[in-house]
Amino acid sequence: MPKRLYRSFQALLLLGLCVFFASKAASGQLTYYINLRFVPLTIFGIILLAVLAQTLFTEIKRSRQSEQEDDHEHAPVSQTCGSCSCPC
Amino acid sequence: MQNTTSSPRLLSRTSIITISLVVLSLVVSSMLPAGFFALLWDRLNVFATVFLGIFVEAVPYLLLGTLASGLVEVFLDRDQMSRWISHRPVAAAVGGAFMGMIFPVCECGVVPLTRRLFNKGLPLSAGIAFLLAAPVLNPIVVLSTASAFGWGQMLLWRMGVSLIIAVVVGLVFSVEQNAANVLRPVLTSSHDHDHSLEANASFSEKMRRALLVTADEFFEMGRYLIIGAMLAAALQTFVPQSSLLAIGSGPVTSVLVMLALAILLSICSTVDAFVALGFLGTFSFGSVLSFLVFGPMVDIKSIIMYLQVFRRRSVAYIVAIPFLMSLLAGILFNYLQP
Image 1 (cartoon, rainbow over the protein chains, first blue to last red):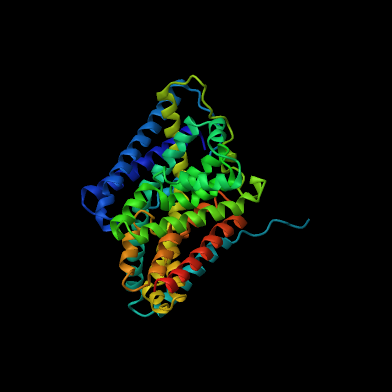
Image 2: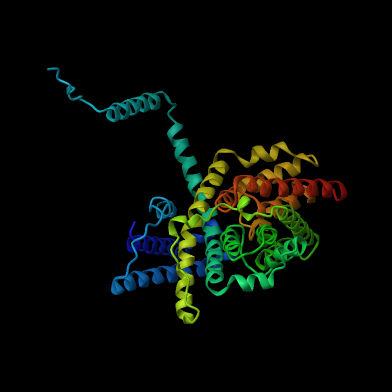
């Protein structure tokens, strides 16, 4: 799979996970799954997921601008992104 | 002249198999009792809830671990690592175990971090000791155990026994001189191009690279976390805890049951103290201690993740030695402190 497409899948999945966690936190459903005292750590996780997604989007933009995309193969999308999309 | 072209078949073999399977499933479902699908739906709901419980609990720690791994990859070089960690087996194992006190990672986050440290030249004994000790000795787990059980014996013995087990397993692995016999070949074989940075790269460039490594690592280890969480959720859904709890009440069987529960429940080490507190009325001190010591080292999801870093035989040792030592410790405490 081309690197830019792979990165796009990763970024979208990270954003999806971020939205998933944020919606659980906003609706108060997070405490169905974890102890109340660990909610701040999940909030930190949401921020980190957003930062990672933003970094990947910037990376995609950079590679498009520089047009120096290396065309090596990454692991099949079904293996990594596919399984990681299960919870969403 | 003989005509070799065969007449076109009406249906392909795949279609015939598909239609047969559909008909068979319709026949079987018509023979099942009426409440079966309602029960199955209920079980699936329980499965989804348990799975999400494990996943939601573990993801922030996996993120922390992969972030630490990304930072190690970019900011730490092999020379620094070899300066800090002794290569003498005992010192390396003890140093590795105490290194666990610094990193706030549970059993999910510690696996990618350990793998990265191995890549940076961490000795086997130190890495294994770190892998087993960090989920128990890290500051978050110490605080959560203290808030559940107080600053008393349970906390002290949990940390002490875990430290001993981690050092012993580290020493066992120090016998192996060739790391390739213990570790799996680098998983990133399909990704063997150079990601190294120039020495004079700016801080923001280094951070950008660290975050990219974090994202890659998160996806790589995340899928095994999901598979492990699914397995654990399936076992919890279809093997009720009550049947396990009914088995053991003696000094030995109770420890065995708690060890089985530790594997089955796959609770994050940062919260397992609160779950263990609930067992204290039903089970003896030794049984609960063995649960608290063994659970963070080995559970279903961590076994799946270990298999991505270590060879199968090594994983067998990493599981078996802590199991036997936790069992022994639990039985010993049951007799000394019933």
